[in-house]
Image (cartoon, rainbow, N blue to C red):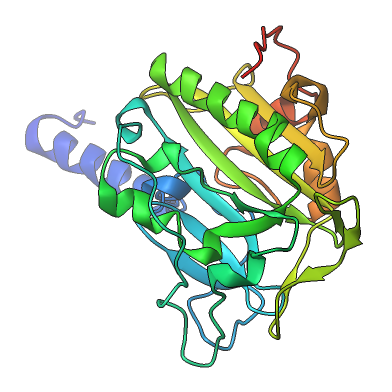
Length: 287
């Protein structure tokens, strides 16, 4: 019997190879990162660009992405990326009602905070979007603001904001999520308040505020050794200037808020970096 040679052999091998490939299951494409750079690793909770989604309305802007709760009149959470080019010298803008909300929502004006004993606390800080006037104006929309106790807003919360910018200035690429939690904070006169406002609709006052920060070298993706910093602060007058004392694990923030941070990060990596509080020793000079 003559062995298979030449073109006959080639056609046989090609046919067997083709049949083998056809029998294999199709490989799923890896998930594509969102187009908005501020949620590269996903949103921590569901939010929809649908007027019917009044308690989790999606606001998707170049400066940030947030979930707005029209019932509470504050965001549920806000997400943004921070790199050195975001930090500039643009002067702070003026607080404005968010006119981009659906028609059946009731925008909150800055006046609702006047005389309340609470600061107009930024989720996305002014300085984190100080490269241009347009970017800075976006963070002064009232949908990005929560009632914050002065000691919290001007103390540890502000110090942590500053520390994040120091990391960005050092060349790090940060992915940040922040938001309010619970109901009932302490005003500057020591009174606990559930809501503020001169008249309805009133703004809910959170009991706590939290922030989660993924710290990357530029151009890299998270690994099991990636640094993640999470803080949980009471919205009252007990807050000191030392933000490091409020560090918790990301897992603890997830448990309390029922959110899932950085859902596009592989589960084994996410589980590893969320398990323990950040323990890096940090010098925290006074303001």
